[in-house]
Length: 468
Picture 1 (cartoon, rainbow, N blue to C red):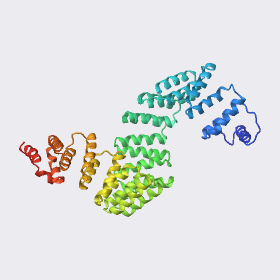
Picture 2 (cartoon, helix red, strand yellow; picture 1 turned 180 degrees about the horizontal axis):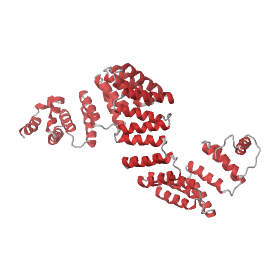
Picture 3 (cartoon, rainbow, N blue to C red; picture 1 turned 60 degrees about the horizontal axis):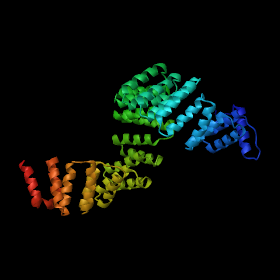
Picture 4 (spheres, rainbow, N blue to C red; picture 1 turned 180 degrees about the vertical axis):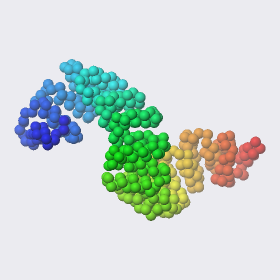
């Protein structure tokens, strides 16, 4: 339980305990007092103090089942599963009908990725519960285990049981919609939410979720109406204002969208997301000075938000102010040097400035961090070719071919490069492959490798394709 100023007895117990820790005096507490003290520390994340309370509690009450269960909880938190199981086995011999033992066993099994066994343990716990609230907690835990197993329909049924017990259990409500989303059942989610709202018509969370469902179906008017009802239900609900702003953006109602984004700035601390969207709206309307001003505010508010840096970089890129674009993408990279989107922009901008070596580094970093788009492989290959790094370009394209087999753009380039390094047999092989895949890409040879078009082998292959 959580202590409050109104609960003098529990406050006194906590004060006495903390006073005891500062002195050499050992005071006596009954087991219930220890349980309340431990629960207080656990709820406030004070694990070290909880452990001290458990240790002292067990010294004074070594046979207390609840104190030993708290010890298993700490063992599980610290991943000492073997010790936790040992204690639970001892407690099972003493109290085989204690549902908390099965809940702790389920927690251990879940940590071991044995989720079906965890569900089985929780089902046994259900047999011993006498309180409806405890049932709801167990239904929620079972639902979570089914989520781990990716059995969303089963998870859904248990989260629905939670709502049957407490219709204001918004955690269960969110999980239900999460399951519907994974099952691609938007219409079923909408029916569920409508039924729920019939019983709880002023639930801003349900209206908000209904609006999101309509948004995913691109039913914009219905989405706007749902977000309006969410705002009517709670006019401080920031999420509803943001989502309504996003829908209005989709409808190109930029001024109205800005109004709703600005509302969020008055209701709460400014969010980088709202500032960014306001910037986008101003840019769409041609208010470029205002747009860039909000992009600056975005990165100032949250320097770690990559979308802010990308927006300001792309703004200057579109304005063909490549030097400023390069300046801001360099600032972004200095903050997060492993962001693949930053490196791709860095490469593109340097490429436009004809800084080929820097562009090649950008494309290489993009690939290193997981951007495997064909365009990235091709751009890097062409830059290496221009720099005369034929062997490196071949290696790059061979790696690309693993992701994009039988790709004409890759094959023609490999053909040209192999001819350039005097690997004529390989050049012929790749040229024939390219021709078989798509004859229309023959221009790659003429544009990138004009010197090899005079080779007889190349002429022969191209002549055959022209005749056909």
